[in-house]
Amino acid sequence: MNGTPPTAAALPTLPAYPDPATDEVLDGGLLHELAHAFGGPFHFLLPHRFDANLAAFRAALDDAGVDGRVYYAKKANKAAAWIERVAAAGAGVDVASPGELREALGHGVRGEHLVVTGPAKHEELLRVAVLQGALIAVDTLDELDRVAALARAGAARPARLLLRRLPPAQPHSRFGMTAAELDEALTRCVRAGDAVRTEGFGFHLSGYAIQPRADLAGHLVDLCLTARARGLRADRISIGGGFAVDYAAAGDWHAFLAAQRPRHYHAGKAFPAAGFYPYHSPVAGAGALRAVLAAVPEGGRDTLAGRLRATGTLLLVEPGRALLDRAGSSVFRVQGVKDRDGYAILTVDGTSLSLSEQWFNSEYLPDPVLVTPAGRALGPGVHPACVGGATCLEPDLLTWRKIPFPARPSTGDLLVYPNTAGYQMDSNESPFHDLPLPPKVVLDGAGPRPHWHLDRRPPH
Image (tube, rainbow, N blue to C red; front, side, top):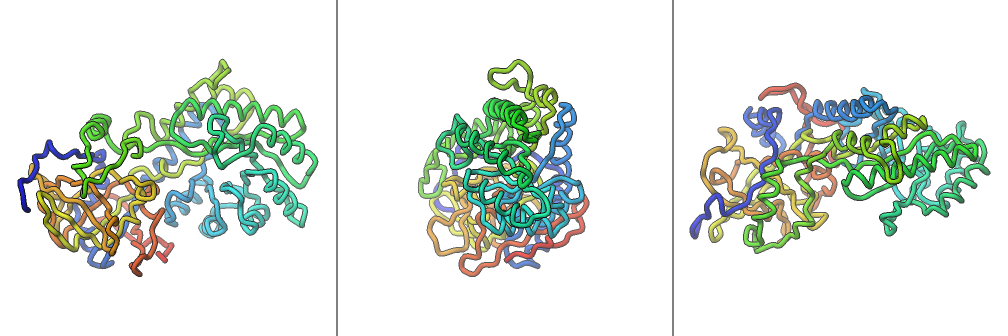
């Protein structure tokens, strides 16, 4: 490389937490065989991680003595493997489109185990949801009327409803109804009679803070009691998702934020620190659910768990990313190396569309791992490089940051981005330049040479 290479201390890093299951895959030689077979980037999935994360959420409910249901938010990752695990475990799926609903039903999830979310839902989505007995999160009074009309038009069962509350602390949210609109919604639900079954309330709350979620959940319990007094069922609330994933250790995360500057990125790219996902979270995943249940809602005396138990109210949660923690990684092959002043620009065989933080004008920060044909590159060396995609667009960079790799990357080496199954893997993917979408490979079993198969949902 030209110029004087920077020292290791000069370049901030953000190593992901060590993960033995992923490390076994990186060291086993399978990845290069798959890269050769597919001729392009791919993702590998670790379904046993999904099982463990789902079990952890269920244990949090059980340990708190709370009757609840876990729904996988399907938008986090489209792989069929997750839906198959949900069906086998008798859990639920959160869907927001006709395609997602069909996919869930087609992989064995029962209609009554679906919750249908999203604003201004498509008529076809509502029609099938009513027929299949799915729980529908109603976002507006108009939508409530549409659902009731569909149920009256010949459904064999009442339409199951959750009425969505606009968060008072986020009055500009697109999601939910005001207090006055909810009061009118309850009146219309009573008037609709047997056409609808009003099962409770929900909300869509941005952010990962614990106390605001507990406060609004407590408010929903009060709404349930109000609805019951009007003769409605109202026996459950949904607090949605918003359970953070903890990608990196606290010390590494805070050191990265303190050190990173535009000079550490290709072309002096500046990312506001506030725009980064919180890659370290002291309370994450099922632990965050435990914290919400242990919190005392504003104005109350008992914990949320105690309030739910005392009122006989079920708790519904809809985690997406949190169920996919450490459940998969993304693999790209280096197909070109270009030297610049003191660092290299790598070009890989995929695009930044496969790391969806670009959607948020941000960057996926956990360091990619360099895997050579001989295994993971290790050692004290410092070989800085950013990572570009294989398109003709200047801003198509998977990683703007100059990563201090321990060896000089070469054509044919692999870059493995860890823990990408939650949103990064396919949220934005498209066949730009007619490049095929990266396939997903399901790894069965542990060890360096697990059995594998393609995810049953073919890329398209």
